[in-house]
Amino acid sequence: MKTALITGATSGIGKSTAIRFALEGIRLILCGRRTDRLEQLKNELSVESSVHILSFDVRNREEVFKTIESLPEEFRNIDILVNNAGNAHGLDPIQTGSMDDWDAMLDINVKGLLYVSKAIIPGMIERQSGHIINIGSTAGKEVYPNGNVYCASKHAVDAINQGMRMDLNGNGIRVGAVNPGLTQTEFSDVRFKGDSDKAEKVYQGFKALQPEDIADIIHFVVTRPYHVNIADLTVMPTAQASSTMVDRK
Ligand code: NDP
Ligand code: 8X3
Image (cartoon, rainbow, N blue to C red):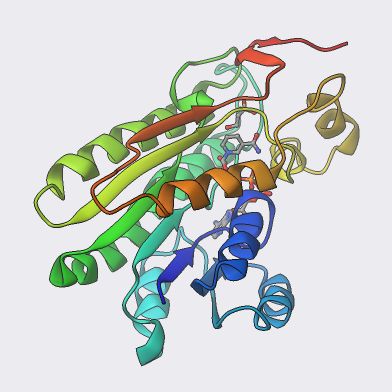
């Protein structure tokens, strides 16, 4: 039985991936800050698989290491790491953007991903096996107006994904990114700080990707034969051609 640690499992892509993995009998370590949601998900998924929850903020370096070190013996050998926790905060021109938003995006999407990886990679090296899936974005492939710092954070994920793959080469560890386009989750609620009118408009007039679509792809990625590493995969809704071109009816 494989063990997967998923960050950002309380919502959206991470939660759907947890559900999909549980159905496939993968042992789960589910992470996020909202403990009530983690507990509820654990109750739901424990029927299908073995589940352990870890509540921590990926920005807090000490908390990341302390929490991951606290894992019980049967959850310690992590085979699959899904680096998914992250969000956009704001959609503002660089000249009026909030520095708190910038800090949040760089601290969570970039540094948080690094801290979690740093806590887990040594075990993978020791066992000479593992699989890391970094959730990037189309925003990590092209910049769009007012996307500035969010796009920078996802371009950093793209660079880190490539760098990790190079540095871990020879250690039996697969590293790859899944880069979604517009996916209907709580992402836009967070970006627009609870302004549901703005958030809903993002997904209006076309069929956006659903978190289950990305979970399906992540599951495909982790179930390839050992010699196959999906290094970089970009997926958009059919109605989307680029970050700024969406066919809305
Ligand atoms: P959601 O807002 O639905 O989920 C975000 C998840 O990240 C939550 O589980 C949240 O958990 C967790 N998270 C956020 N901040 C922190 C933090 N400081 N510490 C720990 N966990 C945190 O969004 P998505 O599911 O859409 O986003 C998942 C990933 O997919 C992100 O990296 C996002 O950038 C990426 N993505 C999303 C796209 C989209 O259109 N939705 C498209 C491309 C990429 P909690 O709040 O409980 O801590
Ligand atoms: C999320 C994609 O275009 O909504 O990473 O910013 S987008």
